Amino acid sequence: MKRNFKFTPTPQLVVRKIIGTITLILLITLTPSTHPIWFGLEAILLLGLLWWSRVLLRCVLRRLLILSPFVAGTALAAHYSATGLDWKILALRSTLCLLTIIAFAETTAVSDLLRGLRLIRVPTLLVTTLALMHRYLFVLADESSRMNRARAARTFTTGRRLAWLQAASVAGQLFVRATERAERVYDAMCARGWKA
Amino acid sequence: MHIPDGFLDAKTALTTATLSAIAVSFALRHVRRELPSRRVPLLGLSAAFLFAAQMVNFPIAGGTSGHLLGGTLIAVLLGPSAAVVVVTTVLIVQCFLFADGGVLALGANIFNMGLVATVGGYAVYRCVNLMWPGPRGRTVALTVAGWSSTIFAAFSCAGQLAWSQTLVWEIAWPAMTSIHVLIGLGEGIISALILIAITRTRPDLVATSSLGVTPVRWREFSFLCLLISLGLACFVAPFASSARDGLETVAIQGGFAHRALAPLQSVLAADYQIPGLTSPALSTALAGMLGIAAVLGLALLISRLVLREASPKKILRE
Image (cartoon, rainbow over all chains, first blue to last red; front, side, top):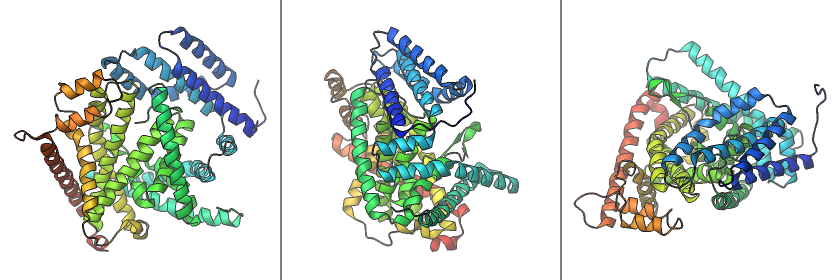
């Protein structure tokens, strides 16, 4: 069955979801390593949640794979470090936490999240900044890849130093364009009745 | 350097979250008071810029590539309090949208990268730039500041992991720093290159940071010495012998309350001295001074190499 309508949760619902996510992560973090059976229960709960949310398994696995090196590295370091922590428990714990956040991120639209944050009185300036960042994140990422492509089409990169200079000039130009865009955005916001 | 969930215990997560919340609210208040409303959208756009600029690859040997971290660069361009807000925003988005860095560890991550790296890096930048104004001084200052900010963040991250008893300090500290000494060099150079590129197209955007000719201030100079010698401990620490001295053993037996502080003292005092000097304080001070000279020399060399290529003389002369 496919849902063919857009479901917009109320801000209260989103706040409840945020609290639920944090509680679950807290629960996983505080689970004593002497009782590994609890990790099994939490894993079953999480997998149930993931199945219920109908998130694509491929997306979850891909994200998990991207984020695994740091977890693996620290777990390995902990293995050789004499703190008495079991590296398997450590890796399991942080993987479960990762799964929780991935489930949250995959099922929450940013606009809903922002509405929820506003409800729990996160400072307006921070929410505005978050909203603007999310709005222009992909615009600027596209712009940067366009500039990179244009640069690659026009120049040969002979040495590493030259490559660094060119990459830096792309990034610098990106900042200049972001600044200029910010000025235009400010004018547009004022024209629509925005007040700081 | 994003700490995932499950690596910090409750006390570390809670302490760092409280500290970060206080500091970020201070920064927000400062920004609201000082920043003209015209530049409010610039915060969001700068956060987006930081995110996009992290996708620009800088090739390193053997097919690997590095990228900008950017806290110090943003602090130099927008001021430290605005940079705290920007980096915090980036970290929140990375945490909730991309699951990069844990939710409970968000406070710790903001503390490391948003506060320690950004404000610490900016302090170093200010100090060096006060001593050495002008475009070349600015480049050197940003190189040193970018390097130091990475070291500061690694230091703080290792401290948190040790405090949570996830890793032992003797492993966490050398492991983090030996990598981040190199990452920091890249960060410093990339930041400086980007600053040069921005100066070339829009010198007015960097104008706030050019302080003109100011006499050397000894207070700032001594503060700089302190910061750099702290950061420089890591040049030696990864390569120093891991044999414990008395102080370290006592610290470990005495529990973790002293663990965060004592190894630092022993690193500075024991692993980090010039042979032939008996007074540890004197040799530490001397080693610190030599360290500053080394980093400044390196930064100068880099800036000279880079500036010759990067920009026509007339722009630099302003």
